[in-house]
Length: 368
Image (cartoon, rainbow, N blue to C red; front, side, top):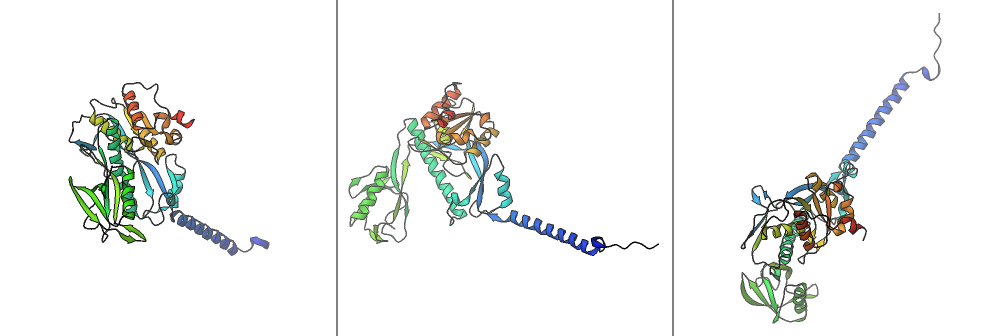
């Protein structure tokens, strides 16, 4: 019996294998392209919850804040400083897969790198900026704390930098305090620096009254034209002359957002008793020397970190309230709105005394 002939598409087997082989190759190429795309560097950075540090407890055996030259008191309890860990940014590329994982996270925030740093910013620039902001926040926190306790201190205008080869080079030194210019006594507010600048631009010769190492002296500097403007080659910064020393052990932590918590910790060390009453309090907020609390970045991450660490109360700058209330973990703490250091100080005292019924509320801030 003769086998029937096979016709049509069923007859040849080889073409079918070719189509199958082509599908496999196409799948491999697609997978490879997806893999490569996931590993391509992307210009974003990720903000994540960072370490929580109790400012009232030793860090690796050393006090976080040390005050010398005046009477202090043992401070106990929890007054937590909150941090934000950052992945990516200048010098630290992320790939697309890392960013996509954080996009769907309830705790992370993904932002374009350019939103924080110019394109020319280097890793060293970022480190230097963070360290400078942290140093500034320590001084302003100390000034705010002393102001809250009515302890006198002096504000001064100091030389922060002398340009090499400028008229001031060799005559003025970084750290010199400028007390007068051409016979006019100067205070320590921002107008003092303006007065120096105006004098340099209008006078043929500038006589600066200085303090160097606690000793007064006068130096004469003749301005020289630089980029069409008379200059003497110094940069000035507002500085503080405190009646005692306050030092901070904060290696690896940068930025200005710890100012309010630093100020409260200093107040605790300078006053009898435990300010927190052994309650677990965390918070954030930049601060001015006058004690005004300013909003910060990374509020979502800080709320999450505080909740995970077991904080009962979270001190939030008023302008961060909306973000804080919507953050993961906010419902596990009492959120307290703070506008000033004085308000934060009173709130912590009320928490310690269990007078929590009338604490300033973030809900009120979001409806104002």
